[in-house]
Length: 123
Image (cartoon, rainbow, N blue to C red; front, side):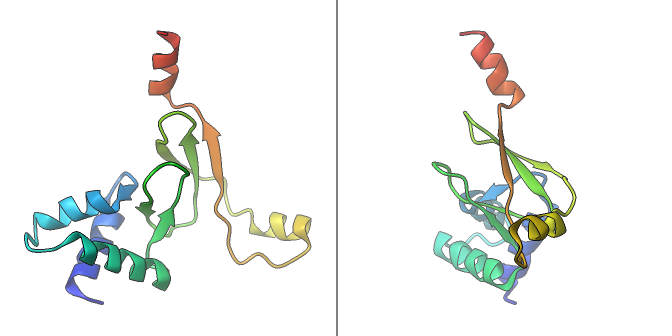
């Protein structure tokens, strides 16, 4: 693993949010000012392929990167905000229902975050 990849992995593991590649790039530049955005994307793709980082895609939003610890996500219908939710591992239940082995799943539940609820009340 390259020096950049190690630092990117550290940043994602330490983050309380779901970072975009640009956010990773900005954070990485504080330590490595000469890093370029393409290097960040290449390392993120490699880390995802290795299973060290999880890519979270939401339609209409930039991809975000997350820890690989088993959890699911709440996605705000209006602003795209992501929040972690632990519903436990549903693999066995999904396998039973589907009748086939499940390798993995990515569950995203749509909701309305507090900020968007408050904005919509004021309209």
